[in-house]
Amino acid sequence: MINSHLCCKNHTNANNALSGLGGSLTGNIRLTVSTISGELILPEPIAAFSEKYPDIHIEMDFDNRFIDLVQEGFDLAIRTDAISDSSFIARQLV
Image 1 (cartoon, helix red, strand yellow):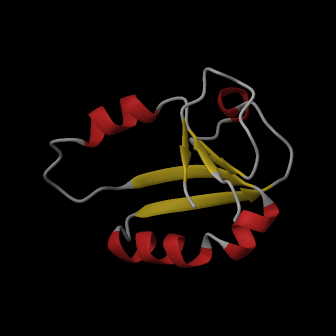
Image 2: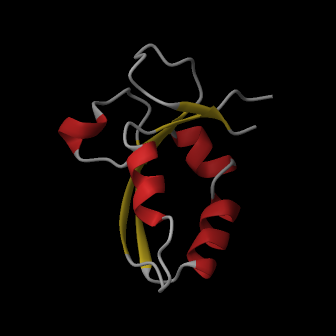
């Protein structure tokens, strides 16, 4: 079993911004993901998300290094390791 964590510094802000919206959602999501997760875990969920929200463009960067989400302009990261930065919000995916 792979321990995957969804890391997003602005998770609460994003949820607050989206709650109560009545129209269709549009925009871009910049996602950095480890190579193994991107190849094995994410294709089906990303396809389902894209089908449900066709006006949201997902840009995925496949990279195994830990990055600074804010400095490099990413909205969220998916990694298969423990999170060392306590300022991140992590969720176990599988």
